[in-house]
Image 1: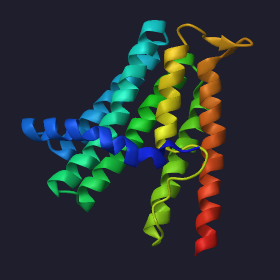
Image 2: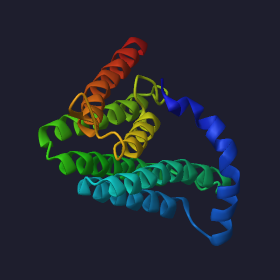
Image 3: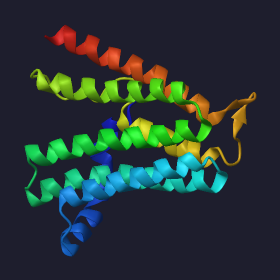
Length: 198
């Protein structure tokens, strides 16, 4: 169920944004930094744990995801994609994941659940890049890739102001539990798949 497989389709809609970024002189690294700052804004919004702040956080999360696609597309267009840019993008993406999940958990005061969710998220991404580091093709598969996580977080943040709980359980707590469980399952899926190829 990974939305990362839809990147080629999303890339078709990026062209006008790539053109605009070129015209105003933005570099891919600047876009990566802007995407990270939007993730920080999302985390701060979620930390407030109020309906309008959840909606604001959803907007910031969706913008973060869009800019995460845009930085790579711009780098390819400018033919400036590099290992340094790739490293910066991956590091900022991991910090972005942390601040978004920490904001969600902190808003509820659910720090143990937040820890479980963050480790699931980080291990999923780590396995994807580690598989590439051992010489295999970069792995985006599994139950929950980064695009899926961003879409799920944004969707829940839009719903929470109207339906904060299901059967008395906070929808945000359910989201964190899903990120924890499915994140770790995805990491194991990626590991087993890569192990079979080595």
